[in-house]
Each structure stands twice: as structure tokens, then as C-alpha cells.
Image (cartoon, rainbow, N blue to C red):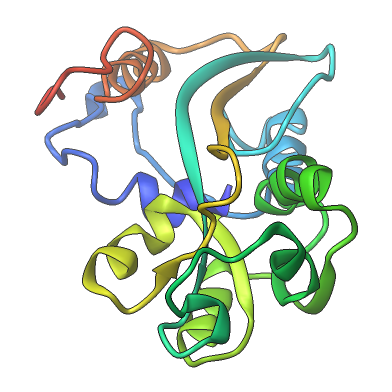
Length: 209
């Protein structure tokens, strides 16, 4: 799905190669969680990497890694001024959110709306980058993956204003169809994913391929 496809996979080590003799050409399709599950369901994709939930019996779902979500705004926004934003101020702010069927929107509804109550949705966009850029330009607040906005918070281009909220975490998952017969190439790729730092059993690893 989009956060994984655009922000998590590209920085990973690039030495992985599937043996072409095994028919192992790797192609990446990026969409929201609903789109990814449809692709796996229809055997248009061998494996899905999603940020939303999946409880459908036809899929095998494996926890891959955890993702931290950050509530951010621009440095010039009133809620970015000294003093932590209260939960009531966060609830009443202009929120920029992802579309329904996206894993990020699902996490927002479950984690933040569950704490603050109904949010004031000012703008709904189908792209995390569009949300990031709009908030950075000075309009509203948002909740996005640390993979998306973490570098901006570190540089001061965005400000983390979620101090009054508990830690916000969600799982990234590997999804396979139960009836999919894995090839040697797919098994090699899955082994690669499971060895990525930050995945279960590799939380303290660095530089593993």
C-alpha cells in the first residue's frame, strides 16, 4: 500500500536480487490497502504489503513491522506555538486526511478519533505526499507515518504536536493468498523482507540484507 510502497521499500538495501533463472522479475504495484488486497485476491500480485487491517479468511496475514504515526503541523500554525496542544484543540483543528479504504485513514479513525472523538475533516486527499505538502504550506494538521514526515520533523519543517496523545502505532503486514503456491523466487523475497531491520526478530539489527 502507499506508505509502504512509496516510503518504506525504496530506502531498503538494494542488493536483493531474485535469480532471473527462476523467473524472478520483481514488479511493484502501489495502491491503498483495499487495492492491494484486491490484487492479491485476484492473483494479480504474489504478495501484498499493507498498512491496514485484514481479517479475511482467504488470506494469510503475517506481522511485518510496526509503524509510528505522528500528528504534525507547520511551524507557523497556532498549535505549534510553545505549550502542548490540548486534546480539545486537536479535535477542533482542521484535519487533512487520507481517503476511506486507506490504511492511514483506518489508523486515524481507530487511534485518534477513538481518543478525541469526531474530528473536523477539512480536506480529504488520496495521497500522503499531497497532505504533507499542504500542511507544510501552513494549512491544517495531519497524522501520517513517521516514514513520511519524520525527516521533516527532524529538520524543523514540520512540528510534532501530538504530545497529549498516547504513542500511536500500527502494524505493517505481509499478505498472501491461501491458495497461492509460492515459487522459489517468492520464498527468497519473503525471506528478504523478514530479515529487514525492525521486523520481528530483527529489531536491533542494522545493515542486514
